[in-house]
Length: 112
Length: 113
Image (tube, rainbow over all chains, first blue to last red; front, side, top):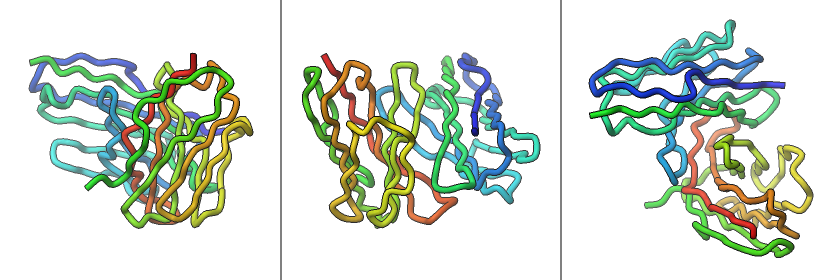
């Protein structure tokens, strides 16, 4: 059974810092991995999607990497801003169908 | 333009009642999902519908039943509501068979008293 974990559970940084969020999954048989952002009381917004054959994806200040064999992904946020404050979730799409397994999320606070 | 919409946003009801949550997507997607996010913020998939066919049912109680009148809608019916059903329910959709980005609705916060 696929399990997804995220470290740290919460992170507080001053504005301008670069930071890394970590995601681990137990079964490397995945179609893809996605990083989402969830603001309080809101739905999820997709940030980056990495297919299983890819190593990384970039969008603006965000860079996500995927090491499928070791079951790890990282989300790198450059030059963090207070507007980046949110909960970040990773999810893997598992191979036996359109089933997504989510991690518990990392709650990020960027202080001005 | 709202891609994935849900109604209502908030739902407060008594134990034992039957309620429905509606979901609509205007993205032309083939697959829609229902997720439950509990008080600990853990998001778990409940159902997936592809072209009006149920393809995943993550062992949720049979009090929960998804209904898809057409490709753009996936409604969630809940019978005999229990206290433990209180959570935020999210609808989502994807376009491709696999490997596509999910688009989420804003969520429906269900409170069972």
